Length: 103
Image (tube, rainbow, N blue to C red):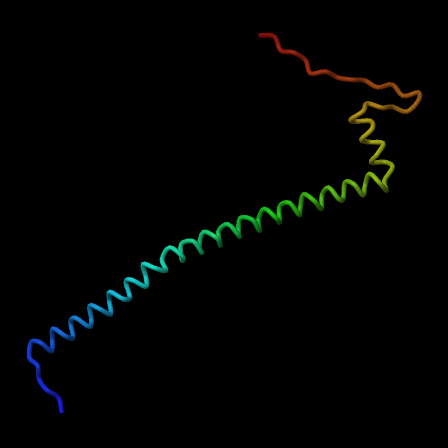
């Protein structure tokens, strides 16, 4: 059997509705900083993964250079000529300097 409480019944329903909304807001306010922190962590993870990929590419390039220096005598000769200015016996080396411009 349902008893009609009049205005008090409607006020009780309104109070319960407001309590439910307050609890939902409390839960939202509690977890909102964690959600933002999680988003920041995900961005940082993506950035670090990109940096790892870049470093792996650099590492692969360096491995190729090391392998070329170990196994390819032409590479060693080219670097000795370019960096150390070495020449074979009987070769003449010409060095060109950048000319200065007149003001």
